[in-house]
Image (cartoon, rainbow, N blue to C red):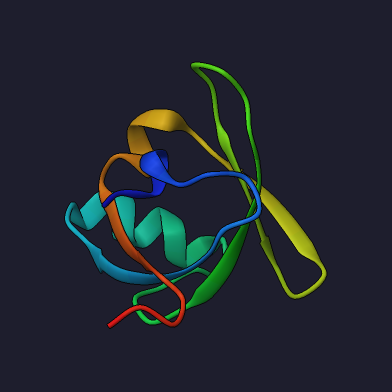
Length: 75
């Protein structure tokens, strides 16, 4: 599943960031493979809003489609 497929309120773990440029941009936001984040909201056809610690970041839909995640607690 990708970050674009998550639902608001889901807590997910970043498993793989496919694209190199996407990986670099995500690292600038403080999000890397293995990071645990919460989906704070999704704007229809727009960005996915992530919450990590006390920070919220909006990730564009195209970028979110390149980030593979799994639900926290799922194996």
